[in-house]
Amino acid sequence: MSAKSSEMPAADYLFCLFVAGDESNSRLAEQNLRVICLEYLPDRHCIEVVDVLEDFEAALEARVMVAPALIMSSPRRITLYGTLADKAKVLAALGLA
Image (cartoon, rainbow, N blue to C red; front, side, top):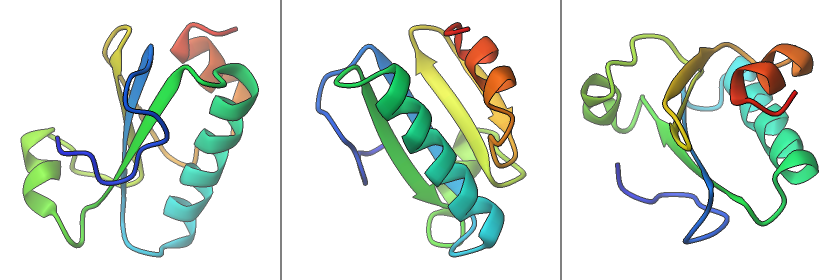
């Protein structure tokens, strides 16, 4: 996955968020992820945002069929779907609870 939108070049937590254009759930997922990262992972994360409407091949390569979808590739691989609005569940999945 190429770097399209990142906050840091080197990070402990690597995220790729697949969104569907300017769709409201996609915007909300990105906003929620950025808030969580700034609060819990300042200076330790990198976020790449991939718009599946512009780069559907990246989504197919990552086996993402629904957006929004978040793939964390480091420190371990997990995939989350939806707006990431349930902060407690997201933090637990990321190992930050």
